[in-house]
Image: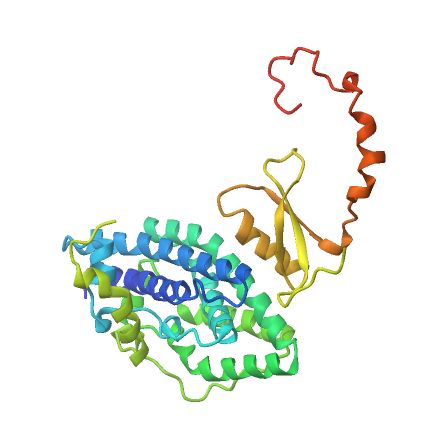
Length: 252
Length: 98
């Protein structure tokens, strides 16, 4: 594997995770529990789409196959996506969504904080700009998890179930392969083991405020590094990619 | 005043300062369960197009409003006192916020 091939894979992980979570958030549009949250959740989706555009455009440039951001978003199959397994988890109810978003935004918060010092200028600039948005996403989801967890008996129990059910997808965030080995040497990428301990501290702190218990690490899902996804990604892509596939020349 | 309630939580009035040094202006209201959520919601609803540099949220109940019955004593006495309005002055050049 050349450094350029590794860089393409690495940037696809960043771009795809933003794109897929963005698509999940977009599905909240017109379905939010109250008007204020409807706008908040859709806004988060728009932030994520902006992040995905930066990364996918960059991937198009460095892979040298003449693909645009749209080609990469709408003309790849699920096995060619490298988004984190957590980012594709279904929205479920509002509690499921904010728990998932807490776990994911705490991850990107610490990852982007570290990537601000990447030797790759595009990644460093991407991380620096995205961090401002992610800081808000983390605040939004954390405050909601605290209110649901430390709310009524019903909201507490529901939030705990959300957390227990999604926990097995968190380990996948921190898996690494030869892509990471190569790019860490070049100071392009960061060691995800370091990110994991920072993430863990943030999550523990929020869960304590929320009076929720952190699930035990037992069986953990993995596979995003190899494009191995759960069934839900296929359904998400079918919906997201339908229009450009059915009408390839469609324009705004 | 505090009779207005619905299922979406208390109402908060939102004030936005568009530039440092200017007054906060009332822009509208929203629902939120507490002050932190009210600030977050205000950020999403009222500042996404670069409208502001500072947000105030105030519980609707905290506002005391004059009522139409007050009009006669509050406002009407001013109707015939044009000399209180500085309309006869020439605006100094460069004065933007008068």
